Image (cartoon, rainbow over all chains, first blue to last red; front, side, top):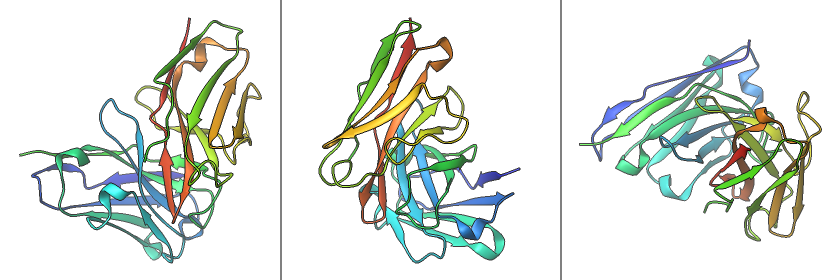
Length: 123
Length: 109
């Protein structure tokens, strides 16, 4: 079964850091671009960041540029999101998402989503 | 930036409804890379349309997508009670980035 499992969420104070991880299984992880999409409680979806199959291309939404860093370890079927300088507005469920394509310029078909991990930024 | 969608739409069973998604010449207007997602309460989103008008296998033909200029649309025909959900559009925005719409809640009367 194709699965994505996020971990690393929690309560953190403003300005601090957190590192999210996502473990993929049941598919050839190295053949797919991957994304992080977040959703504040009761709010809409927001694409946060994406990375191509070989880490050759990465992208970030403007509000996290310079603060978040996406990376992947294909040998261990893992995706990461290093979040620095966290702000209250970063509070959300963070979903790890699989793209059907290898590159970030694909069909926009994000076909597998994890269950999400909750990040709460509050003092 | 966020793509603009109506907060809510409604329709009666059997009717057709259309959800609009307004972008700019830098996203929807420039790329034919629009997708639509359905999200049920407490569940992860599911793709129902990609590449503007293509349906993944298993998605009913009642769902169709289109694009004109800087706007995209999702049409659901033969509305059914189980179509009630939140719907989101998504577009490639250049520079290896993607953007979602604010979401539309569909109510079947």
